[in-house]
Length: 315
Ligand code: SER
Image (cartoon, rainbow, N blue to C red):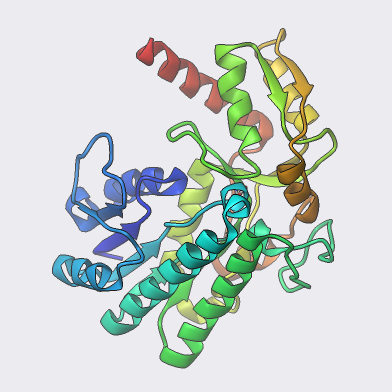
């Protein structure tokens, strides 16, 4: 990875990935692209709608990219509100990006998700290789995406790689349209209002990961020896699994008066119920040394500290 182009660079993962890659590989070597302009522009940026295959190809060529990270996609709840648009954007954007990687011989990353599992998948310690019959449009897109990336590797030799991310928690960009986003909102509300109404029900376990671990996982996978990768495009990765009461309890260790109640959203709850309670990340550990540093309490300490600083700055 020497010249990296990113799509969806203003999204939840993209905005932090760009910063991390620029620190690691140099600002001028990381080209951010997005359909929206970033609020602050500090390095190379191009406006790009991922449905515009020609422009994506031209931008990658002009930049001299050797790596393409395709992050532009709709998340689970937004996709459920507009399934046809989600299919067109999530699949159309991905196939355009894979074509650019094929034509220009680029190393390629795109994330899959725990959303690629469904109600018939084993719920606990979900294996790397298992039944995948998702019941959401987002899940259908993710399974098809995993297969498409495998296909581009097997058929055309494109160096495709990917992980199945759990819910990602971060303080830089507000979440947009995911089911796991309650676990981000809760920290904002804990600081600004001292209370939170959860749209996910008590006892709903989902896998989660703090953003710094997610970014490191992307870099570690992309830098891994290809000869060791058996599951190229769909590695289970996770750092923790919790339900709403457990994250609230972790917050109360620092904000003892924090209160939480429930107003369950049936759409997002149905999505959460169709996903695993906890997944097994042993293939990622064995094949490329995946390791997460943050557990729930370590993440809570950092999230509360960073958000408090952010709220003070914006006041
Ligand atoms: N965080 C994502 C979502 O909830 C899962 O991949 O949509």
